[in-house]
Amino acid sequence: MKSLEMLIYPPFVMLGAGALMRLLAALFPTLTVAAISNSTVAIIIGLIGLAAGAAGAIALSRARTTADPKNPGGASALVAAGVYQYTRNPMYLGGLIVLIGWAVYLANISSLLGIAAFIVYMNRYQIEPEERFLKQNFGADYEAYCAKVRRWI
Image (tube, rainbow, N blue to C red; front, side, top):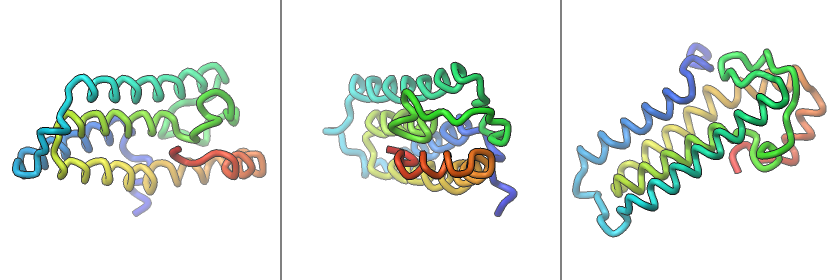
């Protein structure tokens, strides 16, 4: 299904996963675990996710390279410093962390399916195509970077 590759902007994928999580929580209220519901913790987790995503965007901006997820071929520099020394995809990781915060807020076990869907979609239809472009553009340097730094964490 190459037609889905890099078709949807990642923030919209995250919002879709969040909507799915809310829908599942509404459809399966018996799977709510009140003991894990904590708005303060959910907000803190969400803010950590936003910070991770912002750190990735700032690092790309400082390197004067594209942050456009639909145009990875336009990357003019391989960024491996800052947050990129810990994760190859800090903006996507940030979205994942925001969704984890949302799951804590919803406190419904079924909402974990939305997190899983986000990871599967992002890996297959966003990250893998980006990696192909980056490998083509940066060759051995990108392969060495991938050998040192994990895709997510």
